[in-house]
Image (cartoon, rainbow, N blue to C red; front, side, top):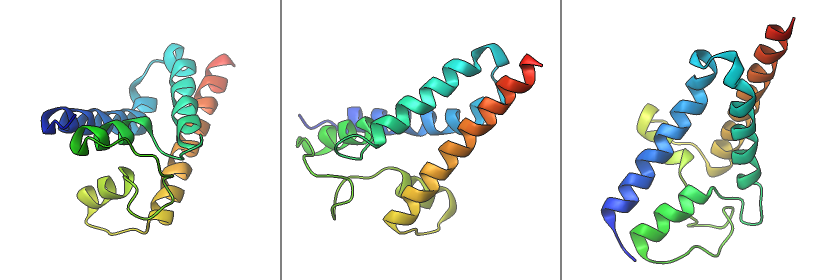
Length: 123
């Protein structure tokens, strides 16, 4: 199945999800933060499963090429989202490893801030 429209829609949803994760902690009411934390954990678990790749990246690749990705994210030419996303925002070309580290660090930092906000509210 090749569909540029579906692939672009998945790509845009992926981008909006990233923006929501980065900014959601600052505008969500505290009562929703436990669900927000669970969402972050689910996303990170998805990255660290057998293929090391986000399911949205795989779905977008499938919609663009008609081929389901069977290779791991660390292999050359495996589909990726975060590195091109950072490049489109900043113009800075990162290595794949650097992008993965930044991605994991960012999400862990956001998770930590979320947990601290939840704990602070309980006091």
